[in-house]
Image (cartoon, rainbow, N blue to C red; front, side, top):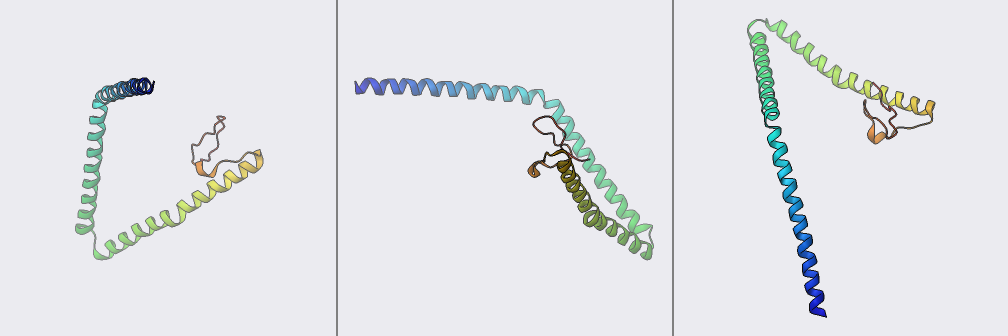
Length: 137
């Protein structure tokens, strides 16, 4: 009787492992077919990424050449200070103000409607489970 139980257990394990193996092989085949179907799109996107990177590199090179050749030292200093001030203004003022306005708008919206948004899912395009729009532009 014990030998029969062991033999049955081994057959059940073999059948289960065979099923898992066939399912894994099927998923791998589906993945290969899917990747082959996306080969053209992947190639186009890769080319686009490299083209954009080259354009940015060229633009940076152009700016460095213009900065070094055309500007007088005083113009270069003013240009550099203006660029840094613009970056700092964007990073330190504009982004926090936008985040604060989104938070206030979501809080007011929640108070007016009696519904609240999950703060873990706050984004400009969050849609709740019931299909209600819960974001702020």
